[in-house]
Amino acid sequence: MKWFARLRTLFARWRRQLALRRSLGARGERAAARLLRRRGYRIVARGFRLRDRGEIDLVAVDGRTVVFVEVKTRRGDARGRPAETVDARKQRRLTRLATAFLRRHDLLGCAARFDVVAVTWLADRGRPAIEHFPSAFEAVELGRGAR
Image (cartoon, rainbow, N blue to C red; front, side, top):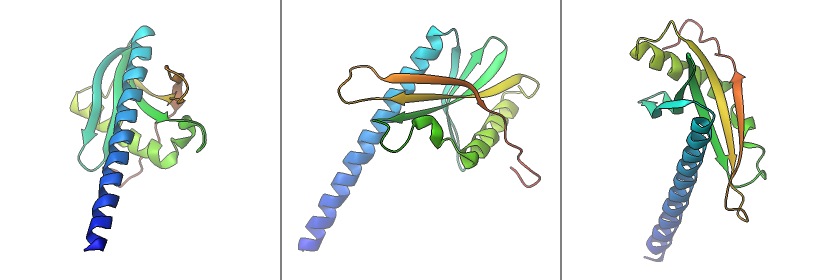
């Protein structure tokens, strides 16, 4: 039964780490939303999710433009800068989600763009360092078989 106790310990550690990551991500999204509101954006949706396609962290309106915001939160730069993690695969996924959001809300004729907000929460600071990258990337071509 020692193996079971060890397994239970490992599982509990994994759950704690997952909870910490989720809470860090939620804190980063709240900080990003505050920054965007201070800059005049209006947040219209948080955590827009489609079952098999993923999630858009924030949807905002900047003037007459719908802005899809990907928030990347890290505790430091050890694994690279947060904004660098939005690779081509993630851009395709966000493009699909944005298209679905625009279609669902009958906004396909509206101007839209993708922003990235990088939040770095260092342990020795009370406030995070936040970088906002407006128009971080263009919508990625979905191709024929795209959903």
